[in-house]
Image 1 (cartoon, rainbow, N blue to C red):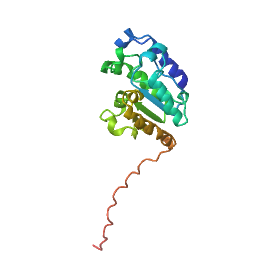
Image 2 (image 1 turned 120 degrees about the vertical axis):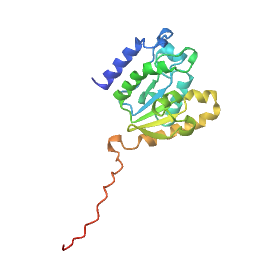
Image 3 (image 1 turned 180 degrees about the vertical axis):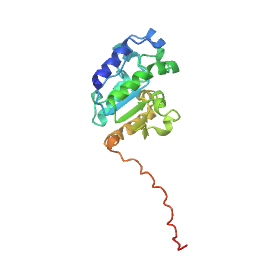
Image 4 (image 1 turned 180 degrees about the horizontal axis):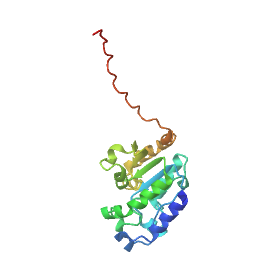
Length: 209
């Protein structure tokens, strides 16, 4: 099965998913979208009002800001894959609950395996916690951390800048670093740290007796 076919299969499953209570209030599930060979995968938290209406990720005000951020580094949203940790809108845009994150976890993991992105950018603390459970976003935003051989870059959610204007230049600066991260050699070409050589025993003194 090709990556495209895998992603399509996951999307079909998400559309009829009843694993958690979020399916009771959804209008449309939001599997995610983008090319199967995307170098960068963005993972947000959950669909909002407009996403629930259209069945697409990041199509509201936060999505418009995301497109502006991508344009600033000469990219388009069609160049990247965009998903969320939960595929259905939490009521009133509340935080995803643990059982909801668990229910959607398999879908997201399969998407990551199908796309095999060079860089995963987490948008917000819930997506960050999937890869860096003990980290604080205020301390590591914009930094690249290798997790299981893949670069993870934690960033504030674009919506945060809409509510707190002081975060806008911070998010813009973090995005400006992405091209440098992408230009690094692929994981398969990275050189592992050399294994230390075993200590050699000192030569034994030969004796005549």
